[in-house]
Amino acid sequence: MRRVVQNNLYMLKIIHSVDPWLIPLRLFMTVLVSATYFLGSTYLLQYALNAVGEGKGFFDILWMAILFVALELSADLVNNAFWQLYYEKRRYAVGQQVNLKIFAHADKVELACYENPEFFDKFVKALGEADDRAMNVLDNVAGILWCVVDLVLCVSLVASVHPVFLLFALIPLVTIPLRAKYQKGVHDKDMEIRRIDRRKGYPHRVFFVADYAKELRLTAMPTYLLKYMKDASETCRRIHAKKGGLLTLLECGCIVFGNVLPTVLTTVYAVWRTVVQGLMGFGDCFVVLNTTMRISGVLLDSLDEFMNFRNNARYIDTMREFLEYQPKITDGDAPLPEGGDITLHHVTFQYESASAPTLQNISMTFGAGQRIAIVGANGAGKSTLVKLLLRLYDAEGEITYGGVPIKSFDVREWRDMFAAVMQDFHLFAVSAAENVTLSRRAEGDEENITRALQSSGIWDKLYENGGLDACMTREFDPAGVMLSGGEAQKLAIAHVYAKKNRFVILDEPSSALDPIAEYEMYRTMLDACADCGVIFISHRLSSAVLADKIYLIDGGRVAESGTHEQLMAHDGIYADMFRKQAENYQETRGGEVSV
Ligand code: ADP
Image (tube, rainbow, N blue to C red; front, top):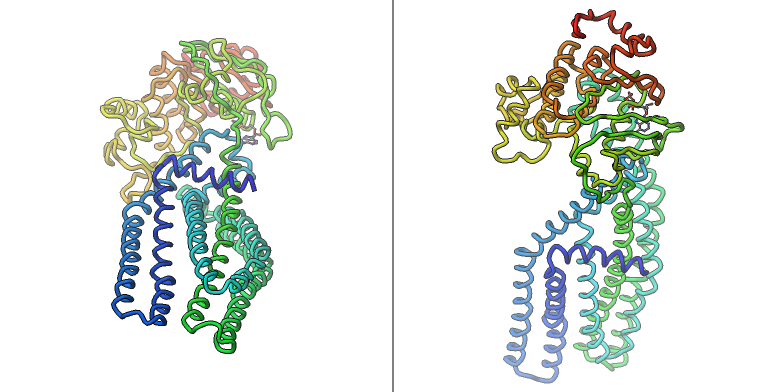
């Protein structure tokens, strides 16, 4: 129960942080409307019938009726204005606040979380709750308050006529355990279905996103994915079928004991007391029947509201589990040194899902202003090494910058020191300029961005297609620019030219370029980035010759290191790889390469 209250309070606090007036105003309107509704409907009816019985004059009754109806109408008008002009707008603001909270947290958790299906499920469920759950809690609290006000007023009225009728109104309470079981059943079914929905969502996404459009047309994947989707739908159907029978039975029990039985008993007893015993007038009989049934209704509603209270808490639990997950990659508060080398000291790293370390006992240095090439076969661990430098994962051993462990720096500040372009980069569906800055475009940045696009060799193409404001991809704009693989890589690489960095990381963002274009790209970049450290990965060794130092990674270890000349003289793995690749190239004087 404590957790139930805590969870609901957690959401109310979020609402309070968005607008401190929202909760008190919503509750005030609830009391106002429920009290005036009671006066205008039930109490007015009793007053009128009694007044007729007591022989009061027509105008006495009329003025009272006008007064009560006017009160009810005024409250309705005020309430309507409150909903239209205020409440609905704030509902969006609260939903947005919860969404922001979830996305801000998602941004903080380590990359490994995205590879953990259990965590990802929680993320999806939390997002499913973001838009409405907080306001559902407030609606629920207001619903409980409505029931309390209505109940107090109706009970007083019935008790003043004949208190025994209150017993009939209590019968629906026997449905509490049935209702609790029903709500839990619905919640469990919902959660199971959401997990499958995520599986169903995968083919949806694949068919929807343009990235997969080519593969889908060229392979048998559509048939496979449609079967995958069909299977997921079938699983959903089975879950519904399995749980549906019990839920229907529980619902029937609730209707019989919560509605039918109290209605029948009240009617029989009221008619018997009035007609057979003559102890109640027809006016009293009518009012008691009407109000006793209403008490039953309100009791049922309040049961539902209390169940909702518990139900809301269950959904909020899932969201809190996500939000309360403590990211393993945490911020430190040490200031970044003015400069220095990045050094790896005996670094070992194993992915959570892997059975063996991907990198083992790696020690190496990336000097400030040095050009370092990391080479090696596919799967050797080159990209993993770069991810450790960027603190997308933390590893055993230590990485220092200027002698200070990188775990002592603020993560964002640390990552901001780099301009990194990865092999699996994605262009965003925003303007070309924003794909270069990878942030909101600043005033007066045009010259810098244009120069960056010129340096990376993509300016002419963009100039013909809308320039800096050209919208990338056709996600939102039918005239959006669709770039080829190589052109997209050039646009991604422009980021490095536009940003002031201490280190540049290029994790094979040049695979779609031909060897000469790649070589030229690296040469231009190394000239432009003379002041910063450049770490580049390339499986084409023709570019590695440009590096001050080359590390060859093999099986997760540094197998060889040195300059191109030293490694060729060493005549090991590097020299062997270089000679095999060189069969396709001619090496010319000064290390320059041509096809
Ligand atoms: P390279 O960049 O040298 O081609 P990677 O660093 O990308 O190699 O990968 C090294 C090894 O780690 C590969 O065997 C790869 O399958 C594995 N690996 C990469 N990413 C993950 C991950 N997120 N989870 C588990 N294993 C991974």
